Image (cartoon, rainbow, N blue to C red):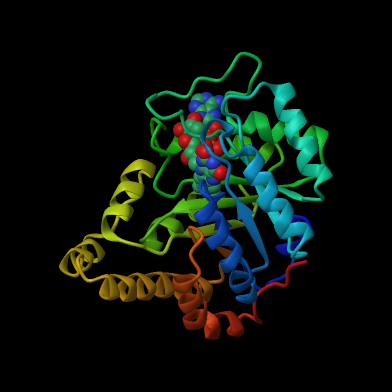
Length: 299
Ligand code: FAD
């Protein structure tokens, strides 16, 4: 099933984002957790694509397994990093041949050690070019990234929004946001998108916190902020994993409940291949999901 079909219903579309593990242990853990994650009833899963296409085969392998072994809908992330247009065309053919219907189309981050994104000769410079290519040559459902707190490289919010509009004009079906911890940032972002003429569903992206250092690193890299009250509460319990866990589950569940009550089209959870936290979060937001008619079904 393609992305636009999921969003035709007023029921919330819940998706989980996974990454392809680098180690045999990581792969074994994911194998064990996948059935549990699927039992939680997401409409579809997405699988990230590593820097420089470093996880290319594994992304396809895992996305393909989700689609073909578990019969679950999936979106394969794809970036412009380190690939010419003809290489992208080859990867796209592999994704299509695996029976996958959806792509999350991204530019990607500069490779480690570099501060600026440099397209390879014959490659795409910005995600809108990848979206245009996909729209012209495939019938994938296409999601793109949006930044409630503005992309770290963008000069300002206006330029960043113009860029998002270029991506939706190029044919993106859905916008999935960067992670944020203050729903006010999402609300203001949606308002600005609508004023700019972006009509596609804008799905909030939420990342449950795993531990204090990890979330500080992630938020500083992606330009999202941790609200002062949450940061202070986390610092107060930073060496007590059980309390960090409870705080993390509580915060993400509260964010999700509030967003669902406000009528968001769905929620994209960055689950980082973990199943325990998301199981507790899904349990706590079940009434808010039920109040909206339950989760939109997946394929
Ligand atoms: P773009 O939309 O191309 O924007 C990049 C920057 O260029 C922005 O600052 C934008 O404002 C600016 N810009 C764009 N077009 C123009 C233009 N024409 N002129 C001037 N400036 C312009 N990364 C991965 O490596 N793998 C993944 O699987 C992955 N999945 C992600 C999933 C989601 C939901 C999100 C939110 C992010 C994901 N990322 C992933 C991270 C993403 O690759 C980075 O945030 C990257 O830095 C930007 O990608 P983009 O697609 O938003 O780029």
